[in-house]
Image (tube, rainbow, N blue to C red; front, top):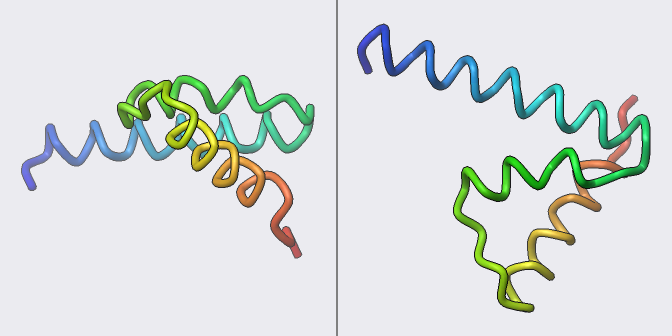
Amino acid sequence: MDDGEGSVWLGASDATDAAITAARASGDWGYLDEIARLLQIRDDPASRGAWETICHALCTRNRG
């Protein structure tokens, strides 16, 4: 991975961490919708259901 790719991954990682933190604090999973778009999560019920399960796990896991 070159430096440019590394900076893209680092930026995405930071954005993802910020979105998860905001979603946890507010209970609004809308912050995670941009991540779903970037990951190309489809809008069909099965894909959205799977994404909601992931969001639930991210936002309710033990933060201890």
